[in-house]
Image (cartoon, rainbow, N blue to C red):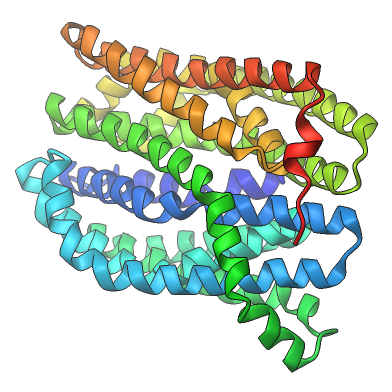
Length: 429
C-alpha cells in the first residue's frame, strides 16, 4: 500500500513538474485551479472508495463470500450512475466554479478547457475508486499497486508526449489524465472480476437490483460524503486564497501542496492497511486483534512521518529545482517550504485515525471532527491571520490538520474506554 499510495500523487507532480518548466506560469496556475475543482467533484465522492473498503473488509472478516460480491456490485453500480451524472452536469457548473476560485484572468480560459476535458473520465474515476476500495478491504494490496502504477506510469509517458512533444500545454495534461484514468479503470475492473465468477447471472442481477441496499449504502456513507466534501473545501479554499497573492505565489503553493500530497499518500498507506485489518477484526469481532492493529499502525505512522520530514528537509534544493525553473515561483516556494516540512508530523495522526474509523464504519465521528476542524479552527484562524498574508494561510492550514488528529484522537480514547466500537459498527450486508 505504501508503494501504491506514493505512486498516486505522481500524476499531479508530473503535471506540475513539466508545466513548471514551461516559459509561462499561467499554464501551471490553470492546472492548479482545475485540479482543485476536480478534487471537489471527484474526491467529494471518495466515500465510494472508503465505504466500500470498510464494508468489504467486514464481509471478509465474517467469511461471507456472497456479501463480498454484493458490496462490489452495488458500489460499482452506484459509482457508474454518479459518474455519468457528474460528467453530464459539470459543464454547466464549471465556468461559475472557476470564477468563484478567484482564478487569475490570464489563466481562467485555460482552466476551463482543462476541467472540461478532464471531467469526461468521471465514471472511470469513480469505478476505480470502488474497485480499489474493495481490493483494499480484501487485503489485495498487490493488485492496487498494479492499478496505480499502470495508471500513473501511462500518465507520465503521455504528459511528456503531449505537453512537450506536441506543445499542448495544460490541454495536453488534461488529455493525458483522461486516457490514463480510463485505462486504470479497465485494469481495476479486470482485477475484481474473479469475485463474481462463482455467482450465477441470476444471483448477480438480484444483488444489483436490491434497492433497499442502495439506501443503506447511502445512509452509511452520508457522513463520509460530508467529511470528504469539507476536506476538499479546505484544499480548494487554500488554492482560492493563494490566488489573491498573485500567479507566482499560487504556482508556488501548488508545488508545495502537491509535495504535501505525496507525503500524505505515503502516510495514508498505513491508514488503508488499518481500514482492511480493522474492518476484518470488526467483522470477526476480535477485540484483541483490533487493539494490536491500532498500536502497530500508530508506530509505523509516526516513524514514516519523521522519515518524510527528513527526506523533504535534505532534498529541498534538488526537489524544487526539479519542479520548476521559473525564478519567481522558485523563490516563493523556497520562502514557504518550512511549512511543508512540518505537515507530515502534524497530519500523521489524522490519516491513521481516518483509516481506523473507516474500517470500523464509525464514520459519523469523522464527519463531526471535520466540521469542528474546518469551522472551529481553519476558517477562524485564517480570518485572524490575514495580515500575515500567505504565511497566515499556511499557519491556518497546518493547525487545521493538527486539529483533525487531536479531535479524532480524543474520540478514539472515549470509544476505547467505553468499549463502544462493536455495537455501533457490526455491519450486516
